[in-house]
Length: 98
Figure 1: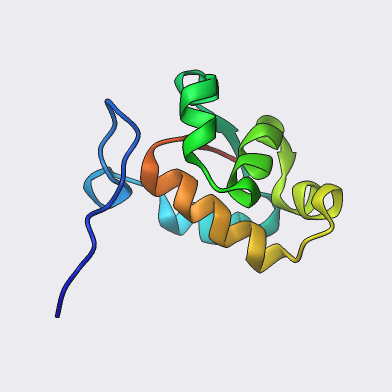
Figure 2: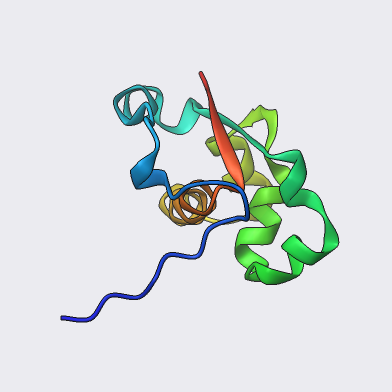
């Protein structure tokens, strides 16, 4: 079985290497709040992302919930959650709580 290497944001470890509060994230569900890391918002880093993930990243301001982002992008919650998992795994976003 071959595995593809994980792409990570320069200077950050993959999510599997970090002590992430996954239980807390699961409990708050669609009301979880995240924010984009400042370092991830430069033009070079933004160009590396797929458009769907880039839109989600730009909306992560620490105040909006996943429910808010789904409503603003006209996408389903699970689709936003998949984008968010990719952003967290790459070090572009961080979990703030509920």
